[in-house]
Image 1 (cartoon, one colour):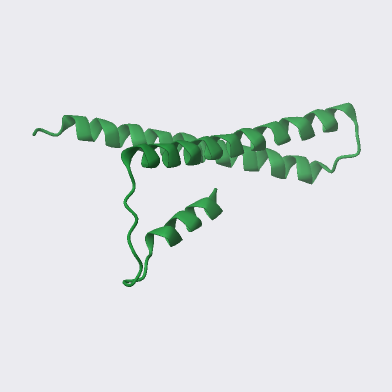
Image 2 (cartoon, rainbow, N blue to C red):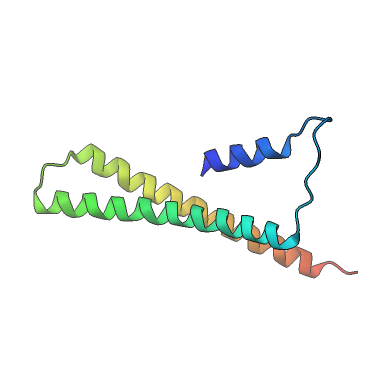
Length: 101
């Protein structure tokens, strides 16, 4: 996810000699939707990997405990980050809706 943000930031930085591409609202919608789906899928993948490793550990398969704990913490951190981002987006939306025109 961080790599995708770095790529997006690089695309925003343009030289003064380059032509600026006009993005239509539909293209912007599709790009944002794709980025959001990819981010949610990466959170889901981390959760699934953590669950899989936990099940392997519970079955007594050859899995290191520290790897299971690291995967569980990664999944937890990514989920908490996603929830905080969602909360900030909702808060920003509510603030915009409270603005008087």
